[in-house]
Amino acid sequence: MKKQPSERQAFIRLREFCQKGQENLKVLLLTGSPYARDIENINNQLFLLPHTAESHALLPDYVDDARAWKVGNASEFVQLPVASQLTTPHVAKYYGQQEGQDIYIKFGENHRYIPKVKLHTITFPLIFDTELTDAILNGCVDLNSRNSMFREVFKRVVKIAWASSPLSLQGVLERVSDTPGGSNAYELEKLQFTWSRQQRQSVLKPLIDELKKFNESSDIKLQALSSIIQKAQTNYQKVIIFCERHATVIYLHNSLKKLLPSLQVTATIESNNDSQKIEMKETKEIEKLIKQFAPIANAAEEESEKTYDVFISTDAHGVGVNMQDASIVINYDIDWTPIGPTQRAGRILRFWHLPRTIEIYAFVPTLTSPTKLQYDLVEIQKRWKNLIVRHQESKKLIDLPVLTSDDTQEINLTAMASRTTIQSGELNLEALADVDISPYYQHTAQLQLNRRYAEGIANDIISAKIYSEETPSVYILLLHNKAYHGVFYNPQKLELREPNIVNVLETIACHEGTEIANVDYDEVEKLSDSCIQAWCEKHDAKWEEVERICTLYLKPEKAEDGLADLLI
Image (cartoon, one colour):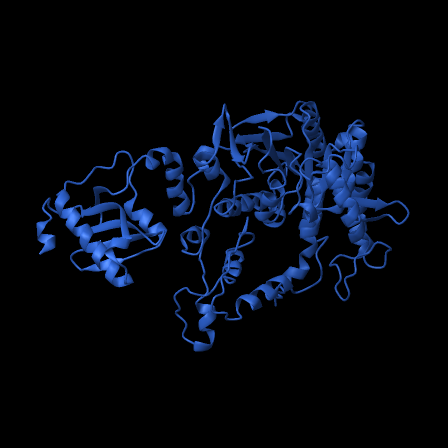
């Protein structure tokens, strides 16, 4: 039976606080990336908001949970009345100021530029694809268990290490060969491998021996990385590299120092030469390294003269860290969830004091020829495709897409032209600006574009337009006691409505080409008076204390031009 994941203590405390039932409790929930593995990531966060959604609970004991805000897919999130979404492309298009080919946002007297973004996908071949494919297909790393989750757990471990680095793969195969009883064995308790230790060693030892002799010039993936970093150095760009495996961090750190001796490179993982143990560095040391790598972003320019060109890390430092001195992020190992690449890219995908282009790379492993392993067990291409699909859903809720499957450009690296390919694509902020944005921000963006014109319009303007409803209505913006009120009045039903601002804007929205409806000005004035009178009676306000700012008559598409019959 699958074990239910434990609830985080922080969420438990927040939930308990939000459920105390305080009458005047207000909750403002801010999140940069609510979507990770599935839609429940969003619903768990919505659960923290006061429960005012319509209830369909059959059992009274569960009525509070039933009233929690909830969505079935990511697209619904933007439409919730309690949700509001604003993205970087939207800010760039409607609130940014143009400076040549660049866009900046003004913070006081300071300019903060929105970066251009270029995405790259690099495919590389896996080593030992025939030998390791046969070993896995024949059950070499299977555990003797009826539970498929336990039985195939080492297939996943081998897959990740295989796609990561030779050192990572070597470490995993050595431990598989050493189990049970060896000094480097896995602790499996009562579980055992299907193959005997001797059988596993006979198959895996030749691969381990080859891996021990493996050098930097033989590693196609590493060579591609080296080419990217060399290009970055010529452009004085700093680089962040994210890996899944600790051993890969060590491997890259040592290999890059050999391949590029002048490169200043640091990492969050270290190896103890005495015990051969690989572990993360102390938190204080990592914090110091981050400041040395990104002194501008961390306001630490005067703290140390030493700096680094390349920072190598696991995802432990892919969240909540300022590292935007760098302009390149490399996903050396692809992540299992769409939130991973997003969080990684977020280290540099921020406003900057100078115009620039940031680049995001993703390394994608491939087998040289289709096999049953490729489509049935390893599923490396399927893993990548699934990640892209889930990322397409995730990017509805985040600032920018950070992965690409586009084949807009192919660049063969000189040293390995037939084996490694880069597929690149540039993001079009203009095209992304109005995708899945909350309606409120879509309307305020129009105000931003037409603010000067709007400020020049005198108060008490009267207009009319055609709309899709079947009954006429009049909209009036009133000013009373220094507060504005948007009011709709239906003269046929004598009905007064004061909807939320988004509904108001959705109804009255016009553009330059919107046709003015043919109506009688005097009749609209009378309808306006009726609306104000009804509002004053409802709110116990005096007529003389109310100022009419503007009036808009909403005429049904099928209505005739006369209005007199409405006033009978």
